Length: 409
Image (cartoon, rainbow, N blue to C red; front, side, top):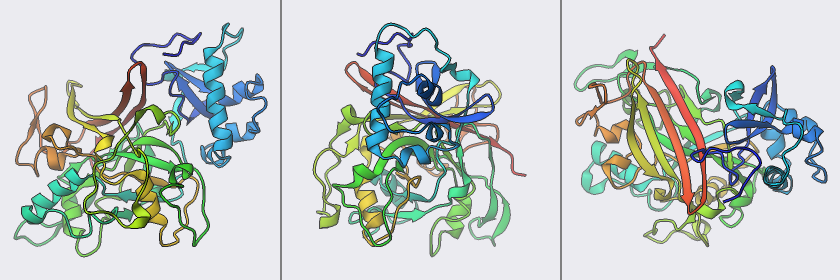
């Protein structure tokens, strides 16, 4: 365990092993910030104190509205900045001035990246099997291509919002069984427990990124809720893919945890059978042991109900394979591109990462602490995602990713 001159709560997500990056609004201006304990760290103020001397980072880069320009400097800059933070806060004595520290409740966290493009994958075998069992033949739940490639689709970047943003219940066409289509507010609003990773290195059109190169192109990870309107989705999902059932909102947590911080939590991936094609093969541990939780906070008594306990290690297709597959045809990627993992479900019902699975298409309602039941998400509910890593004395977390559901306009 690393010590610091700053008082750090034992149960914080933001330990000396973390130092994530985000964008905070301080005194009306946006800055690149990090986090330690209950304090947000203003990196541009630390720049003025010459903390980053010897690292060729410009102050203007640390006073940006998004992390993109900072990330674009590359890991030769971003990694030393994080290492300097660890060194600075771990050294003695305490600095005379700590104006660079702002209590976290006094900082308005903003969307951390300008999302240049967005891809959503479908990479949890358990989730794909559950959905296939519900909507197709249980004996052939996985489509023939699923075990051979990371399946994904291009989503809507403009409707990705930061944690804390209210979500309006979407409207669209639905088709009740044996009825004609109708238009109205979604009755089957759902969350999807996902992780997102941010591209930190661009490529040119025509170039491909191999699985061995992929981590050099990934800056870090964040929590991600891909809100879904199941009744709208199921009617429009033929013959193409997600559209109005998915594009109304997705929620991203404000903190990007770097791959370097997650290094102690690497873990083996699930065995892939049948053997994948050469461009999807990889060496080493490419998954991460990240405990994930979903809470539903009911509106009347603000009761916190933990409805899902999952783990990122369940992903059948890892991030390196996802990026290799995305680019194998020459698709170029850009700093700020966001990739979502797809719903993360495990084998146990308590680890299912969506209400569709948890309530098994509404047939098994979940009982809340206040006595109410949930088949899907109701107006007034707050859905909160949490993520935490622990290995011996080394721990860190991702903060929270939450949104409150408001009635349709």
